[in-house]
Picture 1 (cartoon, one colour):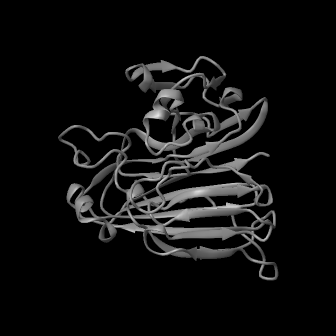
Picture 2: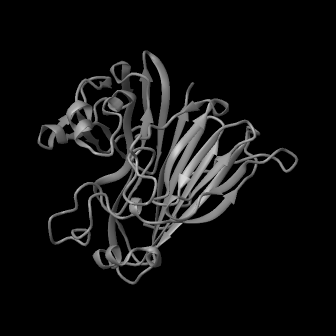
Amino acid sequence: MVDRANRPSALNAPSAAAPEAQVDIVGSGPSSKVVATLPSGESVEVLLYGATVTSWKSNGGKTENLWLSEKAALDGSKAVRGGIPVVFPVFGPPPKSGHPTSSLPQHGFARTSRWEFLGKTTSEDTLDSNSVKLDFGLYTTGLSDEARKAWPLDFGLVYSVTLAKDSLQTVVNVRNEGEKNFEFQFLLHTYLKVKDISKVAITGLLGVTYIDKVLNATEHSQSDASVSITGEVDRVYAGIPQNTTSVVEDGTPRFDVVRDNLQDTVVWNPWIEKAKAMGDFAPDEGYKNMVCVEVGAVKGWQKLEKGEVFEGGQTIKSLV
């Protein structure tokens, strides 16, 4: 795979004469985060630990779009429960043996490593709307000794988070910086906030084949036009032909999740028993107010040769 000629376009920002976004680094150590606020009030917060987006507010800052557990660890002690954790270089439990990721923990090391804030970019897009792009980097030298030993390959990750008035774009650039080829999986584990899961429908997956992890990882085809959540759901939809998956609540469109250079999406809700069993999931009934729609490349493996680059991501549009 070579450097992409057609990269995801930045959701850019204001003219020089207009007010610019305010960007601050808040806190210190493992709890430090980057907070960006547009002149119109929309905001995003990104924890440097894991480069995890923990808050995204639209509608002038009045509407929180991401679900974050009340018991989420925000001190660098463990992966964050909620927001948008970055999963790399393996999705779920790694292969038991014989694979370069076999020694890694579930979901890899990106969400449990401290990233570097590379800076902000602001400009003006064709709609003359405010936006700001925040870049974060993770490199081989930034890994813990444990992670480096488990995955001794040279790589570079740049994660771009672009806040616009009604959308959030998150794009990951993966580069092979070593002499050896490597393969990886990648996922953005997005927790979307909803008012009532019983009134939620997810559209854009009709006819797509999925692996149902609740039903012993059996393969099925999505036969209904929408996915309703009436119990535990853990499905991997692969090779989705269209680029948009939508979340509708009580008949009203709530989110459009638009994939770029990614064909897979995980739909997840723990429901009652699993939510209670997770020590960092709170409140227990929080499953009623969230649904995970997670874009990624998780069916099989992405392969990169020396110097090659993979780039993919999403744009989430808030429709209220």
